Image 1 (cartoon, one colour):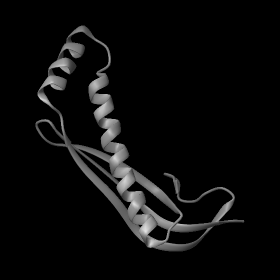
Image 2: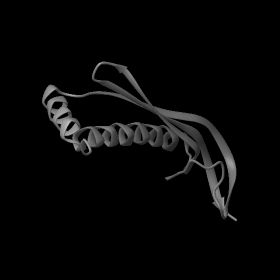
Image 3: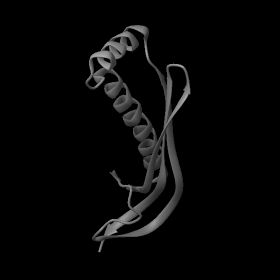
Image 4: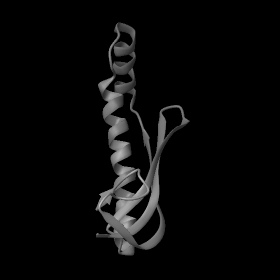
Length: 106
């Protein structure tokens, strides 16, 4: 399934709109990872543990959105938006939304 942030796909035309699809995930970070991330922050550099957790949350939200679009009969999702929010201490919410469509090559 094609997933894009644009509203159309070059070389294709949208033949059917199925509606808005979304996926959400809330993930917590564990104490050990928080401790290691704080050490990374103290000595400088990137926090690989948090970057991996963020990627995992984003991938899960997009995967849920794709699954919903697939069940509707879509073969693409356009206008995708991914939002991140800290819900509370240690809890990260990632939400992905877009419009499920059917595209055909022109």
